[in-house]
Length: 366
Image (cartoon, rainbow, N blue to C red; front, side, top):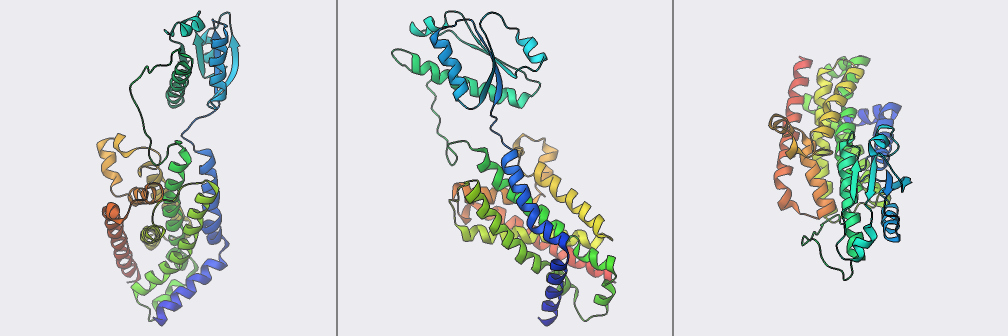
C-alpha cells in the first residue's frame, strides 16, 4: 500500500505541476460542452424563405405570418407578380420558396383548400428535408384553424415521450459527455508513462521495488479521482445551464460513469506503454478516441443506418454503450436491469484494457 500511495502522490505532483494537464482536464470539457451545446443543433431555425403570393388575400397574408412567427423560417422576399424559384436558388437569395396559388383564400372559405407549393434548395439535403417537414406542419395547422367548420384531414395522432419539445440539446449534450469522457481521460493517461520515458525517470522506477501492476494502478487512480470530479461538474452544468432533465438514479449514473472513466483511462495507459514521446501519445489518443466516439457510437448518426461492416466495428467502441447508459438514465429514468448488458460489456472492456496494459508495460520494462 505504501508503494502504491507513493506512485499516486508522484502522479498528482506531475498533474499539478504540468499546466497542460490542467488545461486538458478542466478547460477543454467546459469549452467543448458550450461549443457543442450551442453550435450543434439538429433543429434548424431561421431558414431563409421567399414567398410567391399569387392570391394577395387576407388569408394568404395570414399564412405567411404563420411561417414568420414559427421561428423556423425567416422571410427575405415577397412577390405578388412573378417569381422564378430556380433563379432564387441559383443566386442563393433563399433556401426555400412558398408558392400560394390564386383564389387560395376563397378555397379555404369553401372548405376545399387548394394545395400550396413548397420548394426547397436540396443542395443541402438535410436542411431541405427538415424545412419540408416544418412547412407541412405549419400549413396543416393553418388549414385546420381556418376550416369552417373545423374537421380532421388526417387521422394520425403522434405522442412524443421523454422530449416532447424535440429539443436537440437533450440529445446532443448527454452524448457529448460520453465523447468528452473518452477523449479527455484517454488523452490524460496516454502521456503518463510516455512522460517517464521522455524525461528519463523510467530508469528510476526500474530500480525501485514497485511492481508493474502497482505502477499502472497508481498512475490510473489519480485520474479516476480528478475525472470523476470533472464528470460531476459537467453533468451538473448540463442540467443547470442547458436544462437537460435528470429522471433516473444519480448514484447509478455515478457508478456506471466510474466504470466508463476507468475504461477510458485504461485505454490511455495502453497507448502510453507503446508511445515513446508525449506528442505521439497525445496524437494517437486523439485519433483512437475522438473519431470513433463521434462517428461510430451513435452520438451523431444512428448505428442502424450504417453498413453492416461499419456496424460490426461499432461493437468495440466503448462510447456506444455509455451513450445508451447516460441517455437512458438522464432522459428516460431507466434502472440497472435495463442496462446490465451495457455495463457488463463496459466492465469487460475495462478489465481487458487494464490487463493488456500491465502485460505490455511489464514487457517493455524487461
